[in-house]
Figure: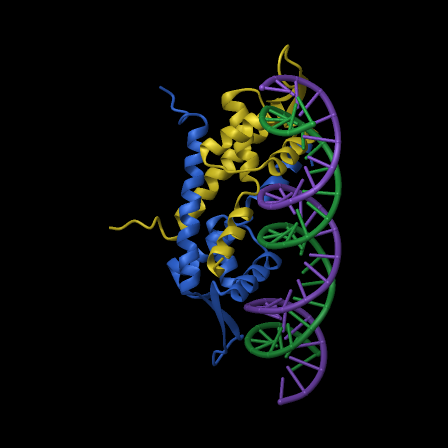
Amino acid sequence: MERDEELLEKWKSQFRKGFLELCLLELLSAEGRSYGLAIMERMRDLGLDISEGTLYPLLMRLTKDGSIAASWETPEVGHPRKYYTITSLGATLLSAMIEEYDRSQAVRTGISGGGKAE
Amino acid sequence: MERDEELLEKWKSQFRKGFLELCLLELLSAEGRSYGLAIMERMRDLGLDISEGTLYPLLMRLTKDGSIAASWETPEVGHPRKYYTITSLGATLLSAMIEEYDRSQAVRTGISGGGKAE
DNA sequence: CAAAAATACCTTGTATTGCATAATATAATT
DNA sequence: AATTATATTATGCAATACAAGGTATTTTTG
């Protein structure tokens, strides 16, 4: 791989830090409860290509922190699944994150004075 | 500090990963060459409250990677300063980063189907 | 003017933390 | 028995945060 491609990939991986969490909470908040693999698939559809080893640790961390809650469900037919829902703490954090995200957009806008071609 | 404040601060710190780099490159690209402390001050004005221990390692890393170039300048009067400029590699990376940033916004838009109140 | 204090500027070390890859584990279908 | 669906764990890497250290230049002061 070329050097700049390599640097870009490294950057992308860093750039995702925090962003994944924001997306996950937003997803659960907007679309309701879901389970690991379904979340992964949904995120892929959205253009976020994550793997199990990325998602599950995230789910576990957020569960431990109390932003989301997990519960096993065993259907009559099919595999047992661990479903996740966003908690009220999670919702509180999510709105603070969205605020920060919006603020960061404003920062960039400030840099070039808006970058308008006028 | 309360628990949710703590979690939020931790998240913010993660969320900045990559974002600082994007802002720095954008700053140098839009506003031209500058040196450490001046960059710090400018970023603070923009609402990015970073410290020397955050900025300088970033500057050094980008210099090493070749995204920016550094050169010492000793004015007739005043302290020697290390000025940084964005390189063509840096500019290439910057535009790729902006693309990715925009894409990530689209991802969020996709989550709630736009979240329009209609 | 000389010595001391303060300031401007940059560097370095260590800790924390989250993402990436890949391997492991288990139960339910086929 | 083999495959598929689901989840967990381990290890490594990289960036930001905090804090301490370091040097040169200006400013203060005696």
